[in-house]
Length: 258
Image (tube, rainbow, N blue to C red):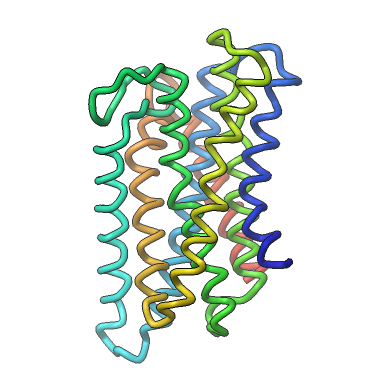
């Protein structure tokens, strides 16, 4: 039950954020979206370092000076995996009208949901691989450190849910459909977490590779989607400040709970 709860926490964050559409009348302003994107980027960068890459390197310390190798290999596989998905799945950049992926007749609403879904895949994988490490009895991964990652991702998923549901409502969708769009964008997280958890349980020696794979995938999302969103237009320092806030929050969570 503890693991099930931990896996569902990030999805709960997305759901609560999507529910903002029932209480807020206006769409999110540009500055607010920029701040939320910066906050999410900061959380994901800190989580990639403290929760994923550092434990991956520590688990391979028996390799001596080559202990970085599993993290290096897994990191690049994560980056290339998200690069492949980025090319195969038609989607819109978050907060933008620029479409990417193969030519598609999908509507703007569907493509926006696909964009956030693509964004959420590595987050679900990260939670799954952390709990897999805990179940395997890995000394570098505790129940509290896995919970810290889940809480950190849930915190940044809350504004992410609002980022998807509020614009959908502003485009004329009903509140129910806008809320559903936000919820559906986050459902991939618990699914990805469970699948990664099962895969890691079958291949425990691959845990350092899986941890760094999730880190590479998350950092790809940060650089490809969130940094451009937080930096566009005037007063981009708003996004930078909230990046620092998100980074600090996740760092404190991981160190204090880990």
